[in-house]
Image (cartoon, rainbow, N blue to C red):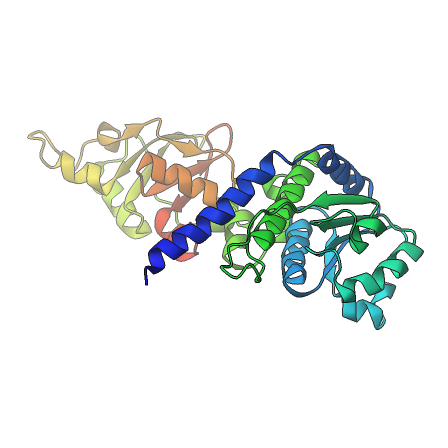
Length: 320
């Protein structure tokens, strides 16, 4: 059996479903976004079975991108959790058939709370469609399941429509990376979006030297700091250049090399710096990699030295 071909066919069917849905997006989608934007409370997502699993993911996406949201299981709702719905909230209910028994059982009670209801199903004339104030159609010509039984293309499209709603809401709210970071302070994602340069830069035992410091004394400072670099500053502690251990090794090849020469002779003047210690560490890593350097000096806007940030520290802290 050619499993590669089967996998390719599955992806093709689902891809065709998504592409076909592009043309079906109409003003109903605009209305749905506007309804959610005007909601003063929470967006409560509900559904059962596969639709429920997709709904839980959609709710999580909303919650992490600036739209207060949570998932409510219809069965739990019938046994007390309906009390979680407030008059300021609104509901997004998902059922591909629109006839889910468990979901249908709570719809009259949702309407009793007089909260807006957006339905997502294949049929606006279904039970869910009739109860909905606004209906988003899930148009699927063919499930990827060879038996046309297991939800495949339909769940893929539903998830994608949920993502599309979330992205529209992010754009409407001008939701930025810093906003996203505030909802994801932990784990690897939090490291990318929450840890800043000031949190990781080294500020103590910096290898500072004046321009006229001898090469010999500069090497001593470099060795003591264990950074492989000496920072050249003026009397006001402003950065004027830097010298790496590689610069020293290359200088040894000069026939007029002298340990008593001023270190400025072998310095890179006006080196690349980061003058914003509030920059995300992940962005700083991107700049370091782009410049193909190991260490970057952190300064203020006037080039006063604040610290240094080494690529090894970023890697050790899991920044990528």
